[in-house]
Length: 275
Ligand code: RIB
Image 1 (cartoon, protein in one colour):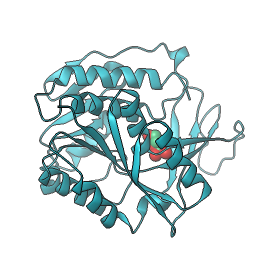
Image 2 (cartoon, protein in one colour):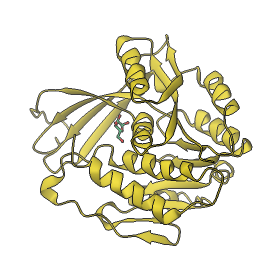
Image 3 (cartoon, helix red, strand yellow):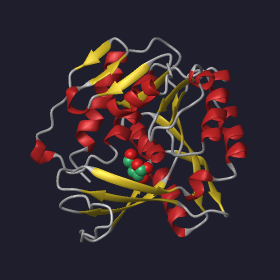
Image 4 (cartoon, helix red, strand yellow):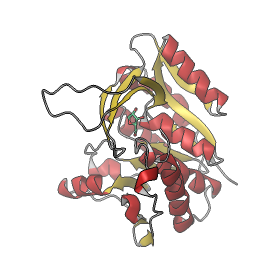
């Protein structure tokens, strides 16, 4: 029996401009007109999992404002369960300021807003209470560390499969890390994890165009010609969402790590070819 992908994480409104090159400190550059997009690593991953055919529940917070309500509706229109995307009257919807250069590389500043909501304990209680052993819980690090810790402990106790994308990188206590089924990291985050002396039970590592691995299982990369790379923002999120959709299809049964890596890579390669 297949399970859900339950994404617990962030929802941001992305304000994006494109520049020839990234500015140096203190420098002002002119970019293209600002574009407003739906983002946030959590919601991006939820959309990728839904695109990959999974039944998806999003758990998080937006502000009780026009942007927040519209974002919640957008996810609902994509078939994602948003009952646990709560409106926080105390904080604005999270926002990410994103600058993309000619090579498609981005730099991002996040104003967390409702992603750092005081409502997390209540929201998590409801989310954890709904989990079964068939579900895959997918986390990232754009919500408070205490919320992630509580989510990991609760999801593990419920018997769900738990994966955390350690992005942006921040250390987790080793005893909390021990409760996840796997971490998902890029090469840079993998080095940060090793430098912190942390050892997860299992590791999925993305190597960009060079492929991806899950412990000893390796997969070649899908090469996207440089002139077709438009924007790398969210490519890692697409990978995580599609990978977890493949895992959820197995429910509590045996997983096929190679097939899950292939699904993740395919989604990542597609994501870089559009804004
Ligand atoms: O991974 C890309 C995402 O990071 C963007 O959508 C932005 O909101 C930031 O959270």
